[in-house]
Image (cartoon, rainbow, N blue to C red):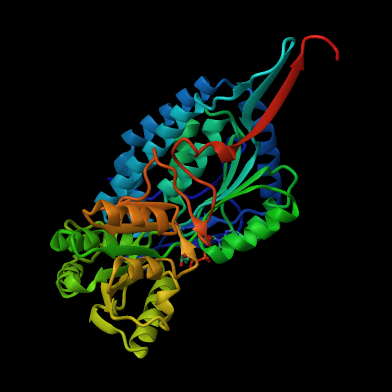
Length: 478
Ligand code: NAD
């Protein structure tokens, strides 16, 4: 039987607690399951000093050595899959099976970046005799990273994988609401012998920590996943210090359903994917633009499958969707549903909190939602979908592009010309056609417009963690 771990900071290779702490609550029961320590400025100073020393040492190890160590830590996490998944379900609420898959996905991020670490090739630029121009990609330095609560293990994994594989050190502030996922990662790296100072973990008041770390001269990169509002704030702070940023921010993913597609299959696949992680995913399919010829068929099937979703405690067998992560999401769902219905949208199913204990919310489908409704512009980040009809693909693309976000977008069609038009014109960092998979270890993931900049994963994933240095080397003094 697994137990929820005692929560600690990890600085310079040591675990530590502090005098002040915040409660961690199981969202399925609203019971306190642990307390997460609040880092003091002295702790943050220690973390900065450790990251600085850790970088000096780690950046001098060979890429192969780094890759081997990252793979070894990942292998340990795979062995500990159920223990880590248990913590994730306790603190986040998602079904245990989905938590297990999250652990595997996190490991795949580590394994991918380990593979890329030995392929950060530079190049030799053609030159005249007696001189060489050589481009190197070198680790950028200590990273301040901030990961959110929706994937307690795989979100921190993205940041840690990029930094550690590249030869950087990192101070990660993981989400206070879901701290154990990151702790399990740090423990695995400690167990395989990562040198002290390379990977530091802190928690506290998010604004206090970012205000302290980002202006520090020690920090050479800020990596953040979270809302556009906070990302914009952190980017502004980083720019005052000329510190580069990697920003993975909000989305409001459109789904274009063309008249030629297999409607039944598209609707069922979409409903299942929409309710994954209770919709608390930046790539969650949310704004459905369905051709009018197949609209009623799609809406009926999609609504029925959403309504059939089995909601409950993620520890219980057969549950497909857990609670929302916190009461803020319940309040946001209620506000967006009431506002949409007030503007004339049809509530097809859901729309209410389930029970009074635990942050459970019904899978919710809104149809014929007018543009004036807040949810047409604001990311719901919950189990809520909008299904509107359109008269053509061009209208659908125009509607898809009508928000300031551009993270994931989806299309269902078997027509090559339709697919091609979407590729050319849909504004998104990730377009998926006939699949709702948007983020894989081997593909570059990130946004355009307000969804941020930079890419995680793929061959591009380590670019942000490295800097380019050109070396001009003449064999005689000229
Ligand atoms: P929020 O904007 O307060 O926080 C989002 C994340 O940023 C949290 O992890 C939080 O700890 C962190 N954060 C907040 N203020 C910070 C600061 N000053 N410095 C550093 N980190 C800070 O919102 P929330 O209620 O926690 O989440 C709701 C919204 O956040 C959602 O609507 C969604 O848009 C966004 N979100 C996005 C992702 C994602 O994967 N892109 C994940 C979680 C939340």
